[in-house]
Image 1 (cartoon, one colour):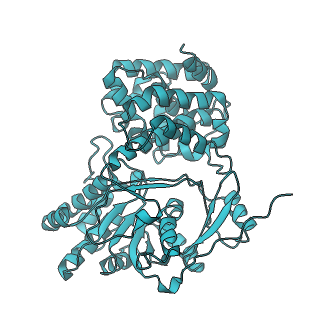
Image 2: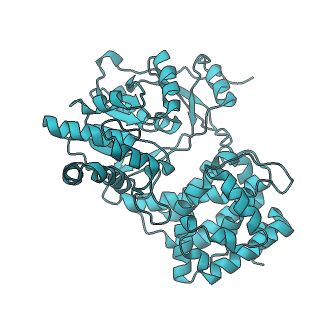
Length: 483
């Protein structure tokens, strides 16, 4: 018999006394398992009751989330998937959800309210209008040009932020802090570039004022949070929460590292384990290269071998061996020291987290959006290794595996469903690259000038030919053997 599940933990505070201090744009699973949980922990200590969250969004899918959240009084079910035993809680830090409208007028009005002192975002790594070729803000993106032409009726989150900051400046209200919670290097700088870059297109004086007066702290966030599907709803039902259509499951581990740059105030997050430091960039580089880079190292060999779950991939000796060798030899040597952190111990922790069978994170999810993730999570390590004259074989193989995956079938012939915003274009390019590997490396939006590097181009071509001729398992096995 299974041991009975522990009771669902409920908010220990009077939610009627919670008032909004934060507008958060992008109410996906990660936000509800991360930032909302930290704030719920604070409120359970009787702190930060004036820092409640108003949910918000700018996409049609956000309207569906709003409807679901309002139907349950904005309570989120969060289930921690600890192998030692699952626990569930109802997170009550959200106190409302702004109406979703095409002109974003309700969102702008909410952000204009003086009680709102932080506007935070989780809009995915690809949602910041960054040019893959230059790494800078892309002022030519159609959505950005549209907002520049109609700044009072913006369609993007950044357009709404600019409009709200303009209204606050006009009213003499101190500006809110803009805090990205997305998994980007220098996410505060990237967000600042998007907001000021957009403002410059329609109101250069406002852009200059934002540059001087608005804070954009950098931060590093971490918690593995799978997508919600039938399995996750079944787990919620086992706790008696079967009426929640949008429960969140997550690993027990969580981490949040922030710059302490909040001129208009902030919750006392250090009381619940958030690290405030000037060295966010060091934590961030470690996490992006070892954890997110590690995800890519698992994803594509796992996908090509028809492995469904990440913990199953970690149990496969070739996949785990590939992750370990590439991380140890080609990634960690170029990760700068992190205060109070042993990189080898951190890497071991990451492998343990990936191996958690309760999380049931899917390989398909890790393979998602490679065209946005590869240039952020793999290419920087590759560039550093090449510059140092170090080994790049494993990183070249990782890139070849991504190319082979994008051809659209596994080694066994299973059709891979579209798994990238640019899937059709990538598939056509990957099929051409079977005969002409340089065609794949010509994607300057991913590789920049690295496609012209003879060491990398040669290794990539050699591995791509091997993947097509003999398959994933023999190719990875040869790499591990040093052949």
